[in-house]
Length: 139
Ligand code: FES
Image (cartoon, rainbow, N blue to C red; front, side):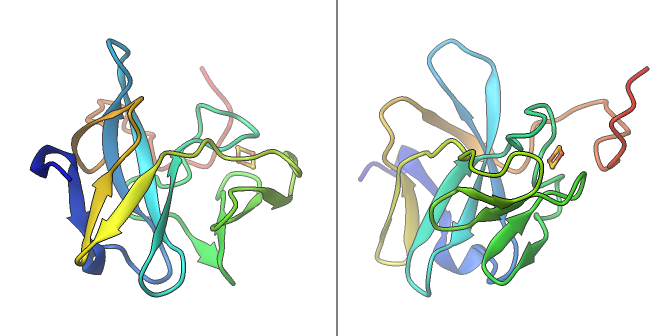
């Protein structure tokens, strides 16, 4: 796997939260993705957007909350199975997070999805001071 596809070390992916990074699909704007542990030696990867309101980030910049192996959306409490991406509870129950292909090799997580290129670690820089809000009221 190419060094340019290296996302991070497996040890940087927390046990009970998520690791956020940025990808680009062709000429589209950057998007955020999250890595989540799938067992001890593997990870799953999803675009960092709730399926209830897709402008809402699951990981708001400091890791998404998790409970019993599920990613929790802080806005309305939807639960997403970390392994399958399926919403198991909440207003978008039955919907799936959008998957991105990754692979772990020798303790390093690589982006293997040909539709995306790796941009960098961390969330998209924004002037939105309200990024961590759980409010859905827009002005
Ligand atoms: S925005 Fe995620 S559950 Fe409503």
